[in-house]
Length: 191
Image 1: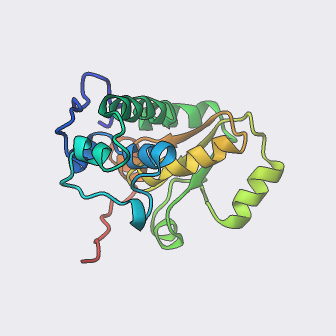
Image 2: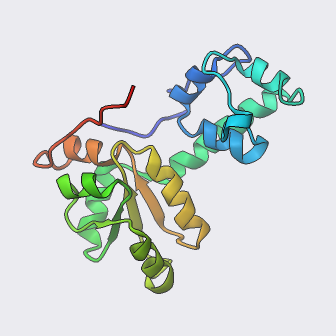
């Protein structure tokens, strides 16, 4: 069963923690580092997975390591608050028959398998949502494993959708925990 990460589960960050370890323990860390410090979002500010937090901070104007660690942890707490577990999502669907559910995956993935009643998040659907949907009504976004939909839900919240959440673990967790009739799949990464 997929569950939210609690503070006890989290990797203890130290100056010697590598960026690979940080990203594994705090999946939104790259977004957090880029958002505040402009680190890791583009080729000119990229970092190596083997680089430590201390090394990263030293080469970026000697940022205080403790400040960067605190920012990563605070950002993670924010990410967790944007998520809904598969079980809570299933309950919300029963309680809210007109719940809007958006699929943030590719058209090919959506056509292969999707959560019943969900809409593929196309540009047209997004424009319709921004123009016509109730921004105070619940909205759930999902992707394959729950990583990309965090960015999408933050985008919707930034546009006034106060009840937007993303599905923890994506359709993969949902099919494993709630609806085993949905086929699970793996995406082959290009070498």
